[in-house]
Amino acid sequence: MKVLMGPDPSEIYRPEGNKNKEDFRNYTSGPLQDRVYNTYKLMHTYQTVDFVRRKHAEFGGFSYKKMSVMEAVDLLEGLVDESDPDVDFPNSFHAFQTAEGIRKAHPDKDWFHLVGLLHDLGKILVLAGEPQWSVVGDTFPVGCRPQKSVVFWDSTFQDNPDTKDPRYCTEYGMYEPHCGLEKVLMSWGHDGPGRVCGMGAAGGSSGGRGSSRLWGPAARPGTISPCPEYMYQMMKFNKFSLPPEAFYMIRFHSFYPWHTGGDYRHLCSTRDLDMLPWVQEFNKFDLYTKSEDLPDVSELRPYYQGLIDKYCPGILCW
Image 1 (cartoon, rainbow, N blue to C red):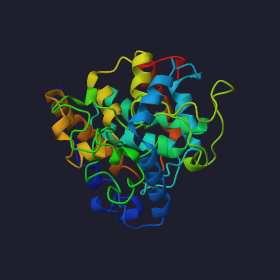
Image 2 (cartoon, helix red, strand yellow; image 1 turned 180 degrees about the horizontal axis):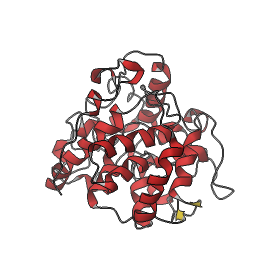
Image 3 (cartoon, helix red, strand yellow; image 1 turned 45 degrees about the vertical axis):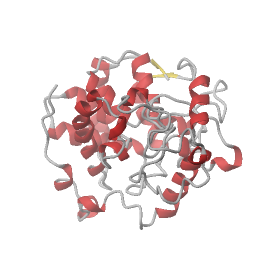
Image 4 (cartoon, helix red, strand yellow; image 1 turned 60 degrees about the horizontal axis):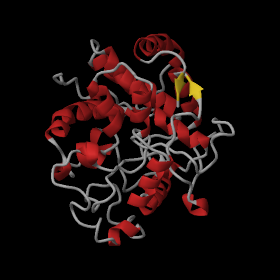
């Protein structure tokens, strides 16, 4: 499927009336800087090969909760992403902002609109008690040397033991050239496979604003957490009837060092590079539609419920 580029949303959406494209993802200054830095410091300390492999081994069969997609969207009303320097409002609004931006630019691709709504739903695992550093933020490959476009690359990896392990501290680390991102072990995050153990007192914040337990007794703090793999794997498990491009965008939309920073190309396959324009097209809306001008969700729900009924209906396993 060929990508038909929509208009750059940064030219349309102006949060606070005057925010320019270059003002997004400002990691050097701003009122949320300390919160953002601390989240990435914890992430870059504890996200290791052993940590991620352990979580893969522990990950079960999506048996923690059963609910619909719209119920999951509603749960994001209780989450503010502590890694995001651009917003300080619940993630549920960001989901609708992203979806509506895509809808305006790509009116004929209803599946793409739904991707905008779905893309951050893995963050609900924060509300199960998982620390935000194991759920939110940009993702990166573990098992090889962090590249310079990783956020806070020069000041947050010093305590990560993999950076001193000769198996993992080189450019390729444990990977072969152009092995393909399918074979790369990514850090845990909300997009794709994964669960994570809590790290005790060092684990940092255990949830977002208004967080609450939502999984019941089967899910204990420190037993599950999402990654940019979680939502991707959950969609596969529940057999969402979306095109391959949708799954790819969900899986890698938080891999900013790749799709925006231009790094890690030495690990990419031809398929990864073919899919890259789709991820970049999605990213424009994920980033530049963030605005304090919050949408009227009640007006939008019927349209998106129709898309859910079409592509991923009913009660799903999470």
